[in-house]
Image (cartoon, rainbow, N blue to C red):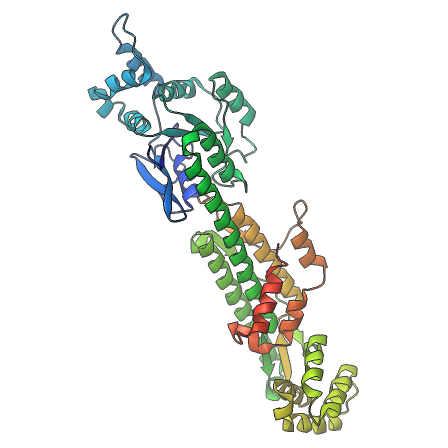
Length: 462
């Protein structure tokens, strides 16, 4: 027995056969997908791999366009009183000139059926059940191959799922799978392969191998995706732009704010494109709306609890620990006069070796410099947008043509605990920590502490 199961993908024209293969192969470039009838004119094949070995071969076939006339033609080929089984009837048809002319497309389908172990019969569930469908199924049944109907576009409000299931049952086709190629259910692929394995029991080991491999790949993809989003958020939380004293005018401030906005937009778009590559979509398959950026977050984030904690730890062993603690307390309470600020600024600047980058930042603050960082609200918006993108990518088939709109607006659909946490909960501690580490911005400072913060944040994204 050939270990690799060969399956023909068949059905009426324009029902989504190529779309099904695109989604199963996670290949947006396979074949041609459009709303026009008869797009596929010849047979194309692909292999699905599991652990580096082929597990399933799928063959895209042209649409059957005139099954009613073909069935009448095939029936007329039998001599009076002659009894032929299905494959013999079709073999006689395939030898006729009409198989290369009037019924060329149908002949390609039947040849591939006869050369395969089984077939998937793709149905546009929005269509009514018509006599042409019954004649198609009679011709396909004559090939004597297991046939699994696949109901496509079941997510549409116009889908006639119950009508189709009842009609197929009357034709003794009781094993039926619903699989929307544009918006497949998260377990839709597993159900399809598992049902196929039930029909083709001798091929269950290879199909189970495929099911298990796909599940592992999906878990690894989700883990990698959450890490990409966590890296984005840590990067944005750590970013800061210092404005020197002579940059304090309103035009200079607005220019600095716009520059930071551009950085956030570019960094978010980089993440969007990385996620699309990870899920094997094209760069244009998602569009990010403009971020509703505010005027930024000023000054006081320098003294968030994490920064002060780290300063206390670092300075406790230095001779100026008491003075540094006093600087922090006075700044937090706003108790400095202009003269005291200048004096302490000089002290902080002079103690650079002891203070590290905190001494430099305190000195800059006291000398009238300002720091622009990404507001907490923007971090929430970016997180929500990326979360929505991840949800959309998980439920998007590779036959989908409309781009995903990456935007935060709108109400949560159903119960989405992750979205609710980003809307109403406290920001994760990892982001507060990143505020105290400007050296983490831009993917720098790749130490264990930054890696731990990314891993901690990624774990909260599901």
